[in-house]
Each structure stands twice: as C-alpha cells, then as structure tokens.
Image (tube, rainbow, N blue to C red; front, side, top):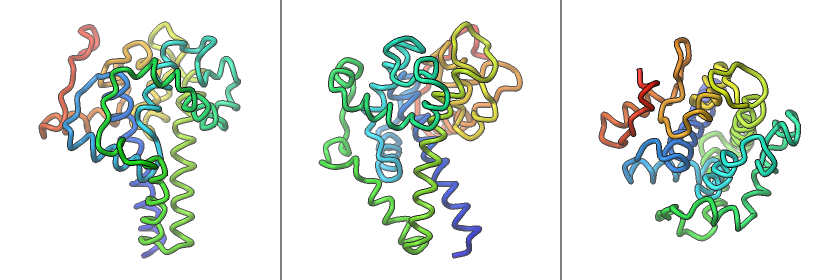
Length: 239
C-alpha cells in the first residue's frame, strides 16, 4: 500500500473517531440532543473502543461535570484554573484523573444505559485490537506509526477544545467558552464551543451566518436513514 493511501486511511479513521465522539458521546449521550438507533450507537461505540479506548460512561460523566462547574473551581480541565498550555498538552491526564473518581461517575451518569460492549471485561483495552488492525493493514512498523499518529492527534484535537476553545476565539453568547471555526472544521463542529455552552442540548452547534458544523449534515443524513431522531433546536436559533 502506498504512503498516500496509508495517510488517507489514517486521517479517515481519525475523522470517524472525531464524528463518533461528537455525535454519539457528546450530543447523544451527554446532552441528549438526539437519540441514536441502537445499531448506530453500537457501531460508534465499537469504533471508539477499538481506536480510542474511551469508556462512554466515564466520558459522559467528566463532560457533564465540566458543564456543571464550567471554568470554575471543580471543572476537571479548565484552562482558567490550570493554564492554557497545561490543559492543551495535559488534558488526557486531567481526564484520566477524573475518570478514576467513582463519585464523579455515579453522580453525573445515573441515567446511563449499559450496552453489550460495556459488559465486556477489559473493553477499554480495545485500542490494542485497533493497533493490530493498523498493523494488519500497513505492516507492523507503518501500522504502529499510523496508530500512534491517530491516538496523539485524537487526544490533541480534544485538548484544543478544552483549552483553546475556552480562551481564544470569538463569543456569540455570555460564557467563557469561545468559537474557533478552524478547530470546528477538524473536530466535527466542536470548535463552536461558545455556542455549545449556551445551548448544550442543541444537536447543531452552528448558530450564526458563516459558522459551519461538519457533524450536522451527518446527523441529518442519519435522521433521514431512520438512524437518529433529533430534538428540536432552541426556537430562537432553529433557522
């Protein structure tokens, strides 16, 4: 396989990881802005298990706590508390620290419904199976390199939302999060973070002319296919 095709496939897997995170973990599970068909939920969870190691209940709990204490004492990863670059480069460690807090998990996810993958012991180590997939596709050396790129890029894209998109950018609404359209383009719309903090349950994060939420057309397609049911946008923003 040529280097170009390896790069294309690696970036494609990364963007699928990004879209599964924003659609499944964030908009559907954490904020219930849409309801996904069980098949869509399973496939997105499976992808994340294989290529990110994210445990959905943990992710949802940490994110809901972030909203509860947004940029105040108690926020698991606020750049106003820990510093912009510490959160950008260390967000993974802040996230893992909060995941280890059993009280956080139980308090913020009492509504979480476990699926088949949640019941598999050691499913959080599914990234090793993902590594094996990369190696089978690209060979052990290039596979390891591609897998490492995917994991590091995925972590840093998420870090950019929790750090840069709380301090740098523009604001449509009165909260400390910011909108950065360039970040939104590579994070499935998550860079429109000021909009999201204003309307957390909105399935679409683009509210103003010139803003584009890449995940929104994907959500609308899932809806047309009968794989998603979107809750109405806030009336004032449902253009």
